[in-house]
Length: 183
Image (cartoon, rainbow, N blue to C red; front, side, top):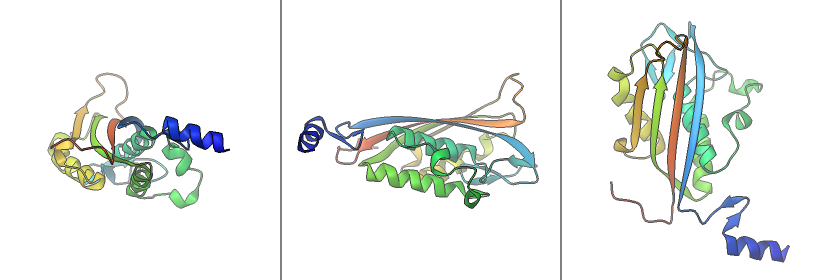
């Protein structure tokens, strides 16, 4: 046991996480089909549209992908493991709860969010008119500057994916003891 602790101290590894890394990158992906009769939430912003995204929780495809990106960056469990759709307590849950848990784990691992880039793929509604609001909300949830949140929207361009929304997210984490870059 003492040898294992000494080796961990030398290698910087603790509980399976390489703690000597200054930067960590995470990738998240999620998709949900549109469904009538529920509100459309993207990035914790309610958008005017006649359908929302179905899911066990609130179906917020962007927050789900961000959550998975954060958890992936620290080699943590994925969103489905932490908040299984088979558990009735998460039925209709606000995805901000999932994001906050991922952030708590990022902080406990000794890291902070440096920046995020995301791409939404959906045919409608148009994201452009809402992009600034979504970026500001995500920045607020992550406690980072709005200019550290990238948000792009694309259409599925003939992929027969008109009834779904997809989100791709990449996050960069920096070790909290590392000197942050000037913004």
